[in-house]
Every structure is written in C-alpha cells, then in structure tokens.
Length: 178
Image (tube, rainbow, N blue to C red; front, top):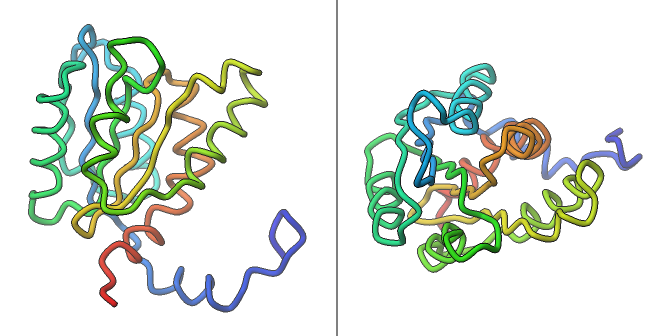
C-alpha cells in the first residue's frame, strides 16, 4: 500500500522494475551571481543525485540569459550517455528569471504533474509564496529535463520528494518508442 492508501498498480510496479538504477545527469545552475564556490543549490542537486546512486555527468553554471541556457541544454541533450538534465535557478517571476520560458519550448512533452505537486509541497513549507515558482519538467530527445528553483530548501524538496524517487522511472519512459 502506498501513502495514499492505494495499492500501486502492477503497471507502475513493472515499469519501476525495468527502470535504470543509475541515471547519468547533467546539472546546470542558472545564475548571474553564483560561482562554483557559492552554488549551494547546484552542489546539493549533485550531492543528492550521487547519494541516490546516480552519476553526475557534468555540472556547470550559466548566466540568466536565454542564449546561454539554450546552449547548455542543447549540449546536455546532445551529450552521449546523459539521460537527464536538472536546471536549478531562474524559476521565479522577476524579469531575469527566464529558465522555464527558455526551456519549455525545447521540450517535446511537458510533465505538468511535476510543477503542480512541487508547488503543492512548497505551499506546506513557504505558504502562498509557492505560487511564484515556475518549476517545470518534461521530455526532450529521449531525456528527462527538470527546471527547479535555486534555493537549497526548494532543491532538497524537489530532489527528495519528486526527482530522486521518479528519476529512473521517467528516464526509462523517456527512451521508449511507440
């Protein structure tokens, strides 16, 4: 029985068994101000991935600039062996927060449940300010892409409650053909 009191379906159980155990992931921090030394959010993404047995294929910091973000995502999607991308930062509503706007058109399919549930979980922690988050997930070129806020609280929430539990499952689904 799951937390909701429902038995997980045979269907989801079967998919999970077939899911890859380790998902090589590119981590991209979007920030005008962070450096390798001050990028706590990106460092936490990498740490939590590694702790769950996933390979951190790369970790870079790019400016809050649509061209730089597109370039980094394109590189991640083209990289051999990379099965997932996690971008952190630039998800708010300020004019410089362009990560979701830049990444969404690159996705072939949006997975709306990720943003919906992330905001619902955030609401429990931060109250109505959760509506300001434009967290996003989707699939592109057979890879799963997540866009999450840069704060360590948001990173920990997204990684522990949603991304780590479903990363293998989503990565396995992303590469399926019809």
